[in-house]
Length: 184
Image (tube, rainbow, N blue to C red):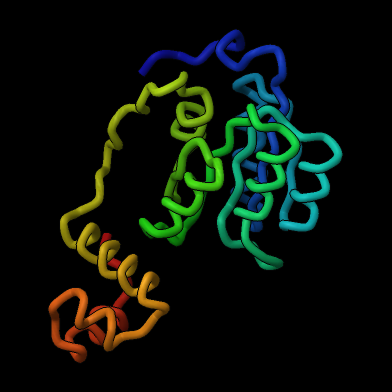
C-alpha cells in the first residue's frame, strides 16, 4: 500500500469527522491529524450540519446512524455547499440499500465498520475513477446473501410476505432469517 503524503491531500486539508461513538471519534481524529488533515469533530447531525453550512470542509467522514438523525442529511448539505468535497459514509449497519443511497446523493465511498484510518484515508484520497484496493477481509457468501435479502426487504417497505414472494422463498423461512443477526 503506497504511503500517503501531505501533497496527496491538497491545499485544503479540512476534514469533518462525524460519529456518535466518542472513543472511536477521538482515535480517528488523532490518526487523521497525523496524516496531515485539519480535523473538526461532530457527534450529532445537528452539529455536523452547522459545520457543513458555516465552514464546508474539503473532506468528510459521516457516520450513517446518529442519535439525532441520519448522516446522509449532512452529505446532502455538503453537496450543496461544496460540490467538490470528498465524503465517505461510515456505518456499523452495512446494507447494500444504504450504500446505494449514500452514493446516489453524492458520497465518494461507503465503508462498513470496523474501518481503520488507512482504509478511510485511501477512500478519501482515491483519485477520479481509481478504485481502492480490494478489502483484506471480504464479505462471506452468507453475508452477501443476507445483504441481498435485507435490500429486497427494504425495497418492499419491510413487508415480509411481499419480500418472500419476490425472493421465491417461504415466508416463515424469511422470518427466521430476518430474526437472526447478520453473518460475518
